[in-house]
Image 1 (tube, rainbow, N blue to C red):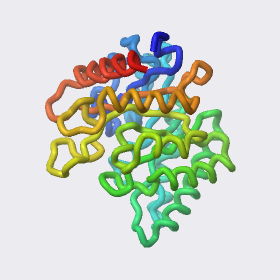
Image 2: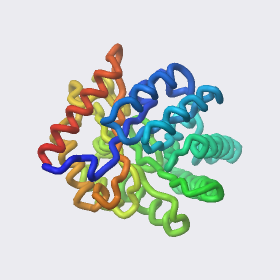
Image 3: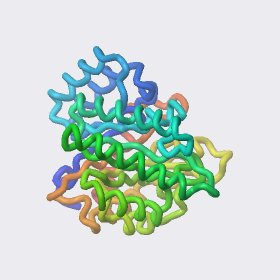
Image 4: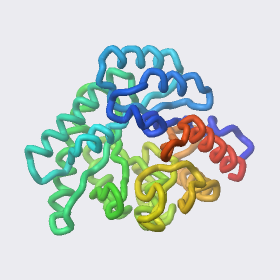
Length: 303
């Protein structure tokens, strides 16, 4: 591709994965957000909860001056607390819902344009009940977000049988869910992630094409699923080219090409397309981020 990538998308970084010591809403949040804000490669940043209101205010100052688009990942609020938004235990479902509503409040406070979350675990024999619980919860989240402004709500499609074991899930079910939700809420959409596609046992086209009309956000990442004995097995988002992993330049080329062909990546939309990469072991986060940039630059040059 001869034309610059920024003409077609806002390049983002999932802050709390690149710097995993911040994923619980604590740690060196301000310092690491500043690093990303000072890097002109990035047009967008995805943050999560920041428990200290003083730190939150300082981070907002940085983001306000950065000319970056901000999105909010609610996933850590669920994953680090063991919450399940589609729990069949109503008290637990409501607890998870309240948690995400607090996240929506915080996302608005931080000037975010979107809020993402994931569906929870399920049992095969009660899968439909879990699905309906998810519909109920997501409807409440969309209504709550709409009552406060124009923020969009994105459900991220995760694996259903390897790591997170979320009800959404395979492309067919993701399509059913998106159709149902979009029919009622225009602020709802799906987030797709290159790292999750191999875990769904789908090709890139099989995963993307059925839900092409509902995608509002995309992630770029990698996974290891060949053998449970391999380092970084599961939903660990290792760097591109990690040993025994599934995604590198070739797969990123195919992913970007597919997203362009369906019209998601375009001059008109300029959607957020973020790296979701995580250092493994004692890897340096900044080197892992540089790896992601190089991989994308190579992939874009081949489109």
